[in-house]
Every structure is written in structure tokens, then in C-alpha cells.
Amino acid sequence: MEEKTKCLNKVLRRLPKYSDVREYVLRVSREPIALSRSVKKRALVRYCRRVDRVYEYLAENLLEPLRTLKKLLQVSFYSRIASNALADGLVVDDLVGRLLGKLEVVKKLSREYRSKIAVSFDVAESRELYREYIGRVLSVVRRESKYLELLDRAIVELKKTPCIDLSLPVVAVAGMPQVGKSTLVSTISTAKPKSSPFPFTTKEIVLGHVNYGFIELQILDLPGILDRPPDNMNEIERKAFIVVTEVADLVLFLVDPSEDFYYGFESQLSLLKSLKQWVNVDIFVVINKVDRVSPERVDLVSRAVSEVVLNAPILKISALKREGIEELVDTVVKYLKTSRGESP
Ligand SMILES: Nc1nc2c(ncn2[C@@H]2O[C@H](COP(=O)(O)OP(=O)(O)O)[C@@H](O)[C@H]2O)c(=O)[nH]1
Ligand SMILES: [Mg+2]
Image 1 (cartoon, helix red, strand yellow):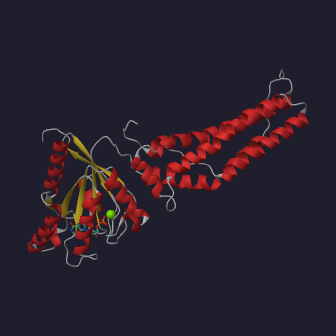
Image 2 (cartoon, helix red, strand yellow):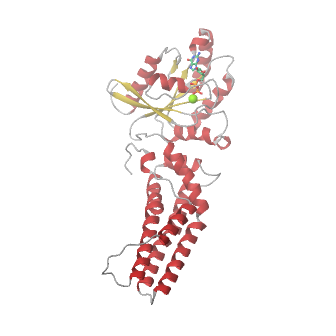
Image 3 (spheres, rainbow, N blue to C red):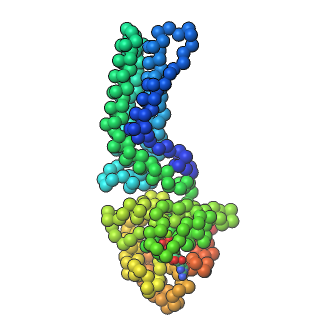
């Protein structure tokens, strides 16, 4: 599948609920159908048209959106983001497969009843056949209504993911809650995510662009991650985890060196160690908030961190006071250029 910028919000459509489908079908069944004077067997023709309309509605509102979704789910990032929005253990690809399989029957039923109505004996028979048709179609959709609603939840989640160009480099900003991720992203990029003194302010993935000469970098602000195994993470933390494992070309791991940091330094170090194991790309540690701690404390934190990341750069910044920002962006751009085989 070609991987260009995909704005899922535009590409994907919400699915109707069973009640929406039922309402539409009942409306079509009531609505008058205009026919020109020359048409013979008018009642039969009207019922045939109604069958067509019901089928067109289902094809356009259920089958097509499901097929579009199925294609997108070939990108494992989208598939994992969508599954993350479902109840435990459900895999979005299985649900789409199931629904497409079950709803395929609607096409067969529509053809079958259209032919039967076309050769029906009289108005009463064609009406009876039409009723039977909508009864059967609605019962197929009703039986799947639980799955339709689940999938719609996954679609809503996918529509919230920003328009990332997966063929261009992506820098993900990760770390515990409150370390200053949103402040950094709003300092260096076009995105202005909300930062606040309360943990878990950032609940969604936010995409910003960093303009660096002719280069435009994609940078992602992420929800905070706590130091616990992925299986124990909540849905919001897992979203951040999926980004760092699926789409990031480089992870900036932000650390708060403050002695009074709510989650402590040891847990940040422990999270960094875990991320090193889970993530396949390089991780640069960024010690933030250097404006509020002593240089000795920064050194101490820096030494502890270097034992985990070994030779990777450790940057020191104040996102709030805009200190060390230029060097950070420089380092990132140079790294991405060399890692993509271009000279720096
Ligand atoms: N002193 C200081 N405070 C900062 C700095 N960066 C962020 N903060 C503060 O730390 C808190 C959390 O910031 P936020 O960006 O929301 O953190 P996030 O949860 O990691 O996204 C806010 O009150 C910010 O103003 C910094 O460089 N220095
Ligand atoms: Mg944030």
C-alpha cells in the first residue's frame, strides 16, 4: 500500500447504527416513487426500485466504508490504534472480516428478491416479497449491531489520529506525565498542544511540524507513559506506546530532573530502560527543566542516564525558557539526515 499523508478523518466514514439502517429502510418503504406514465406493472416496478434503494444505501454506508477501513488496516500502526480502542482482546481486522462476510449476504438477498418481485403474480405477492426482503436484510444487520458499534468506536479513534506522512521521518516525544513534552512540542513546532501542571492533560497524539530551513520535520506530542508493562497500561498510555513502537524514526525521551518531581527520577530511569527494550529505533534523552535545578543535579541525572543509553546524545534544555532548543533541533535534523543516507 502506498504510504502518503493520510488524513483518516477525511478518508474514513462513521458507520450507521442498526436503528439508522432501520429508519432508512422504513422511510424508503413509505416514500412514494414517481414513475412515468408509460411504465406498466407499476406496483412491481416500485417494489423493485425500493429493493435497489435499500441495497444502494447499504453498499454506500456499510460495505464501502468497511472496505476502505480494511485497506487502511494493512498499515499496522492504524490496525493497532484501532484495536486499542476496542474492548480487551478484540482485533479490529477480525471484526472487519466478520462484518464484511456477514453483510455480503445483503447483496445476494437483494438480487434474489428483485428477481422474485419482477416475476411476481400480483401487487399483493410483490408487497409480501418486499416485506420479506426488508425483514431479512434488517435481521442480518441487527444480528451484527454490536459489532457495528464496536467498529464505529475504532473508526472514531482512527479519525482522531493526525495526518502523518508515514513516508517521511517522524520524531516522537515520549516520557512520563508532566516532564514537559507538550511544552517542548509547542516551543519548537507548529502544533500548540495544551500543557498544564496536571498529569494526563494530553490524551491524543498531536502532530506538529518543525521548519528547519528547507526541511520540515514531523514531531508528535504524546500522552505520558507510566513505568509499567504494556499489558498494564491504560488505553491512553498504550496509544503513546503504539506510536513509539510503530511510527517513530527517533524517540526523544524527556526527563524531569527535579528532585521534587512527582514520579521521581528512578521510575523515569526504569521507564527508559523498558523503552530501550521495546523500541527498535534510537532514543535520545532530553533532560528538560534545567532552569529549575542545579548544574550538579543535571550532571548527576545525565550520568545515570548515560549508563542506559550508552553513546546516544543526551541533551539539556529548558522548554519553557527556550534554552538549548536550537542545539536539540540541530542534533535531530543531523541524525535523521545521516540515518536516511544523506550527508549532514
Ligand atoms: N520550570 C520549567 N517548567 C517546565 C518546563 N517545561 C515544562 N514545564 C512545566 O511542566 C508542567 C508540565 O508540562 P507539560 O508540557 O504539560 O508536560 P507533559 O505532561 O509532559 O506534556 C507545566 O506546568 C509546564 O509549564 C521547563 O523547561 N522548565
Ligand atoms: Mg502533554
